[in-house]
Image (cartoon, rainbow, N blue to C red; front, side, top):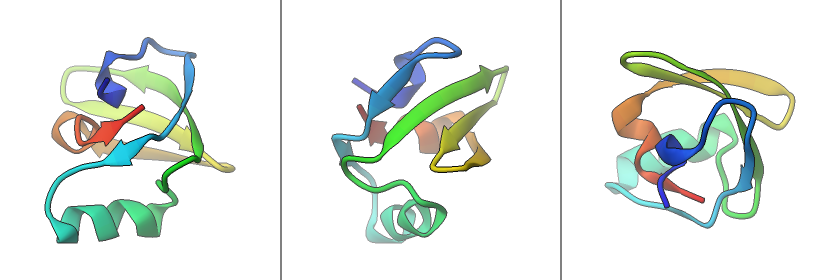
Amino acid sequence: MPLTMLNSGEDAAIRRIGGKDEARRFLENLGFTVGEKVRIVSSNHGNVIIQVKDSRIAVSRGIASKIMV
């Protein structure tokens, strides 16, 4: 299921990252790799704040929907 389906405070492991090569590389550079645990910190109208490793990263809902957990 896409990362956007998780509620705030829920943890999950990344299973797959979809999208074009450029989008996948962008996410990998931010720390989003297969097997990595992520947590939804908050979600509002257009953005999702995700904790990955020891960082909090805000991405658009469109980008977050490419991350499968």
